[in-house]
Image (cartoon, rainbow, N blue to C red; front, side, top):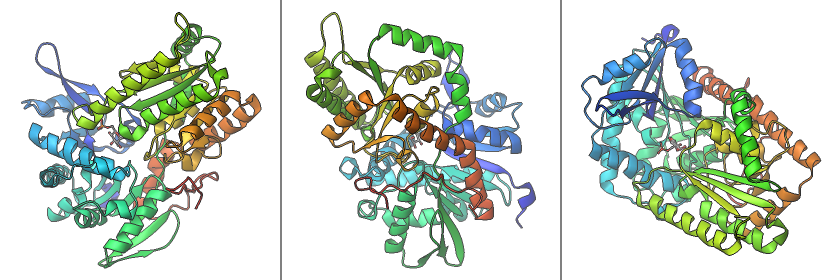
Amino acid sequence: MENTQHAGLIVASNRLPFTLTRKADGGFQVEPGSGGLITALLPVLRDRGGVWVGWPGTSEEIDNIDALLEEATRKSGYRLRPVLITEDERRKFYHGFSNEIIWPLFHDLQTLCNFDPSYWRVYQNVNRRYAEVLAQNSKDGDFIWVHDYHLMNVALELRRLRANVKTAFFLHIPFPPLDIFVKLPWRFQLLHALVEYDLIGFQTLRDQRNFIQCVRTLMNDVAVHGKGRLLTLRDSGRDVPVGSFPISIDFNAYVKRATGNEVADKAAELRKILPNRQLILGVDRLDYTKGIPQRLEAFRNALMRYPELHERVTLIQVVVPSREDIPQYYDLKARIEGLVGEINGQFTRPGGWVPIHYVFRSLEQSDLLAYYRAAEIALITPLKDGMNLVAKEYCACSIEEDCVLILSEFAGAAAQLQRGALLVNPYDMEGVADAIYRAFTMDITERRARMRRMRRAIHEQDIFWWVDSFLRAAIAKDLSAFPLPEDYVPVNDIGGMSL
Ligand code: G6P
């Protein structure tokens, strides 16, 4: 029987919020991870107690792993449970199925997919392992919240194990349109696996709509009811709500940190080193979905067509290393570095202006915030993105509300920010170049009006709103207390046109 009164919360994600790393003396230490999901969910787990299940960051055998993880969260009221997988499984499950198939396909880049059948087998096995650890650590009626594309099969595996739990899934990346999704050799299996969840959440109405279209077309026995932000699938007598929940950031925490002395000093230092110009900032993980080469070409185009930008702008492009074991990622790094060299070679004034400052490393948070504070313009132009939290972080840190956000219309964030940002098609080199010039010449009144609108939306629908609205949909199947922001207009996949 369900014991809803004492239902525990269990979170599952590819990685645990703490990672085991080797120390100089050969032993292991547990280090906290960072990121929006961790900020949002750890307080909820602390309040209610609960468990987080995931990969501990290493495939090495560690005798005292449970004790190490126990120690890291001793006084916190929640527990960490590791899912142990071999190096080979990790390669096929994480690098292979997750990042060489689902990642490119769901970002509409099917030509980059490597549909190796062994990846699918290992993906199923590893998802089963997650389900086993979840089943061992849950009791009847518990609520299991599964995150992202690495773990789409977990609910199905839990059902096979006859675990009496409620499950919900949130996809952090986009869900592709039907004609792209059908390229997946395991399209039927994956859709059936998703429908095993008791709630399915997407970032935007665009993703929700794509998923629903796939269900309508590929699953004859499933009916769709309702309209708007929370729909219902009826599958053999079960009702499965399907909603859209735009993820966000801890707005107040960003404002607080961005106004601190350390960040202010670092931002002032940057301004001193790069005076008399506007700084344009790009910050991305190394990833082909981020559109970095296309952005560099657009910047080159702007410098060619608008010579008045020479010496008056500097592009700071920060690239954070990521997934470098995957061939497309290291190829991309070489391409970006080639382009930066070319463009700087073409425009640099010896002894003076260098148009692009390129940073390839992970940044301390205070350095990242200093870049946000120092830059007058952010250039965020992914080819497709689930949400893009850099855009929201940048706005939160624009304390004086005098900065301009240039944003891809294919980022999930465009649905909430389109009335404040300059929206661009990242493939349109001249269009992006024009937007750079428009941002450069935009007067303060327009900057303030636009930025204020965006900051209000991000403040009102912050990360805590996101957690609350998701849990509310799971428990009450009702989102009337959580309307989308007034500014929210669903963005179409084609041309950013409003639906
Ligand atoms: C995206 C995914 C996350 C993932 C992150 C970093 O935002 O939605 O699930 O954690 O990229 O990628 P990585 O492969 O380093 O975890």
